[in-house]
Image 1 (cartoon, rainbow, N blue to C red):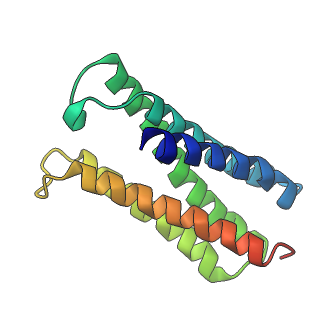
Image 2 (image 1 turned 60 degrees about the vertical axis):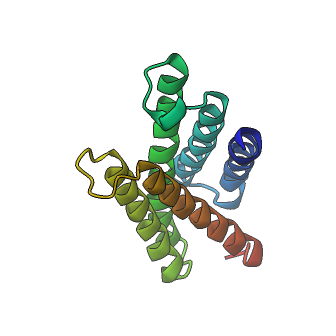
Image 3 (image 1 turned 180 degrees about the horizontal axis):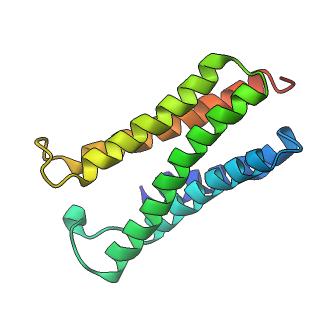
Amino acid sequence: MRYAAFEFTGFLYLCFASALPATFRGGSCSTLAAVFIGLDGLGRMGAGVFPCDPGCGGLSLNQELHRLFATVGFLSGILAAITWGIIFRRYSLPPRLAWYSVGSGILALIFLLLMSWSRNPVNAPGLFEHLATGVLSLWLLMFAVRLMRFPGE
């Protein structure tokens, strides 16, 4: 799971991020947004290299590094989704894609806040972590599919 889910997908995120500046030329904002996707990929890879302790509540070095990489990955993914949503409006891409991007970033942020809320009535922090991951991964997939279907827009 660590190598297929974390390392491989993180590598694919890096590849996708490196191709984006060639697709969206001339914009420092789009380059920054591509860097966010790359950082998300690096965060995924680092979180896979350093697994969390059982229950993800330990204080080991692996746990701390896992938490650091996961935090960088999630925050970068959230910033990427919101930033690309703003960029999509500038490139006259369908407004649905812009709203979907911003909404995905906000929803992932809500899930992460619920995960870290100590008085959360639903005692399932892993659930919210997986939901945030799913939302951001699905957003990136939709973004990539959109570019494959309509690369000239």
